Length: 394
Image (cartoon, rainbow, N blue to C red; front, side, top):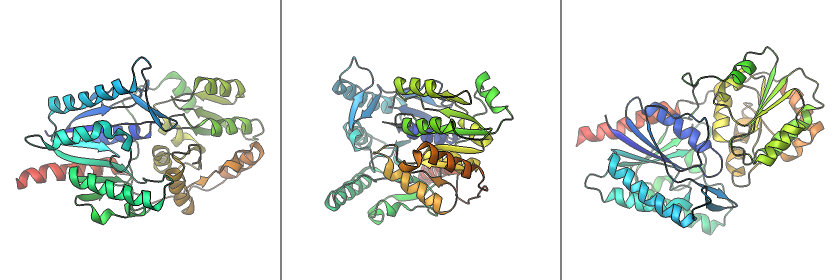
């Protein structure tokens, strides 16, 4: 069985972790997997038991700057430890393939550890294949044309120097890579679309008494979620305020995300009426969305895939984070054009207006779509082709 080392770093939310974990759920059926996690640990988050999981000293990004989660260590000390540990993991595990999530198309702040790792890998006696795991939309920052041109050239140089395959976790029927990265034809390695990576039900995860009670109620349900939670307060606060004047029998289940600041979480709990349940996290969000009459959420990749997977009526607010507005807005507006969901904008968060929008959305018919949601399985198939066909040729 061939071995895959998968590097993942989430700096703000938890979307990169969720998508990467879903991919390795497929990979462990055919490969031995070592999953390297560089983000802040999340209580109750379930990794596939078949995969080895190694946690680097975690870092996050705040106000555009990297920060060590462990306040007792300097950022420089954590950087040095991570750089060393990555090479040690590679040498111990001896993978046939190294997968790096997003880089070099984004996450350039991680060059301090990724370039040394890639150089080490390239200099190995039997270098493994190197793959980029890339979401559907990238590079939505505001920069000058000259800065963009330099970024495109740098990405091309890095891909052509180190990578054997780019897996794009999207459906070209909705968005193509060249819309974000116009120099695709200058990449020397293969670029393969896998379809979207949509979560599967976690049948092995025990359901809590709280989840079981909520999911088995016969009362109509609205589910509100904010991904990791660092940017979701504005939306959830608007829903809590609207719930006071909302004339509907629906219970409202709110999941703030594990990273919402404690003071914001406490404020929401204090303001919530008896019909609103405020929690941080559930491993069974997909079941809630299957059960719900309406989903209200931010516009991250994984939440959007949950919407497509379940077909739930949906309101998406993609403007919560300045860092992610471009990516989330582009995807949400493309799906809204196809009638799959409705986009909320900042002016829509006024309580009276939001109440009207929610009431109207609950009456909307469900709309089917034809997007490929088999991204995890197709990623596994593409990696089989890369590793086993290459071995056969050799």
